[in-house]
Image (cartoon, rainbow, N blue to C red):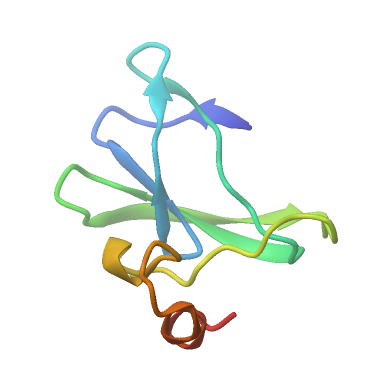
Length: 96
């Protein structure tokens, strides 16, 4: 869970290239549940306008969570998920 303050033009957030859903509490404050895999370290949080244009970014530090499930790489399509009958192809495309 993350929360913070962002100016009104900010409508979208990305963490390491993955967009996540944000709930705006009021005109400036937001909260969000952000999926994070097992990797830790410094991650880049980008704020963007509704069209996806970057308005600002900050580096955040995340603790490693060895028991977490790895996330697929950004841009992975729904048809490439494990629902695909060819699981080996999915694993190869997802980088897992």
